[in-house]
Image 1: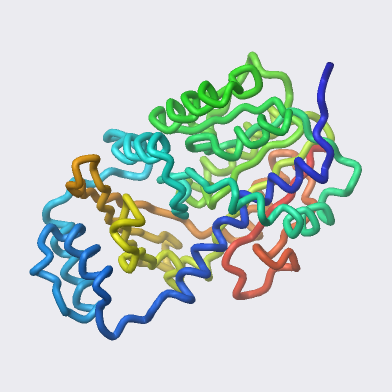
Image 2: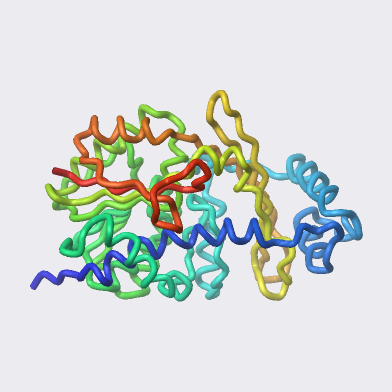
Length: 356
């Protein structure tokens, strides 16, 4: 018998994942400004730079420069499309197996969410999103684009939905499949390694709902390819179904909201340090994010690596044109976190489209 999940459960899970990204903004606003350096920060910088003595007692701004230079010289770069390996996917697998609950906010890097934190926002999220799609809509078949390691998709599966996740990185997909196997959800959850701009799932019936979360669409820097995402997703959603996704605004990229780190974390409480700095080109509307990491190995050594990520800022008008050209009905755009109409300083937008 087909089991439908009521809006009070399913819709809440949709936005529960979205709100996690708010933590990045909170962290950026509330982290210490750091005229000096805490003992934890010194130790973290030692892990990053490879020498504790090299960074002891220096101001945080100087540490940032030192860290940036040393990492750029000594680390290999993994592009965000994963074409030169999947180092971070290996670390995701290790962190998942050891039971880490640390939350990180870069979507293509790590979608290993703390479900307890996500589900604590269910009530608030339900109120925000239900107003956009109506109380009568029911989700049974869910398609998650850029699904990463499948945390969101598997939460839907755990609630009784049939879910399909698609991600361009084979390493991420492998982790998602392992998690589904471990959770006993292989009959409800399937995962494919594909480019979402070329989405082709001939063996899958149409979906009630498509999702693309954690600013994943900003990583498609070619507008032609983004337009194809709307076309290909439209082909896989049933009439009356929805497409819900988010995008970072130009304000967020221009104002350096990617500039984050967790270098004040106690080494005993984390297995991964990160340090991110961004540069935005307003002419090309492209944001480059240099992300440095130090991952703690089982023997206590720190494995260091760097990734370079690119995001494009799209205007709301561009998204509207692409979506409607593909056949979507424009339903609503919301300011992230407040669920009110967008404003000039909105950092993230939530979009709701419907297939007629």
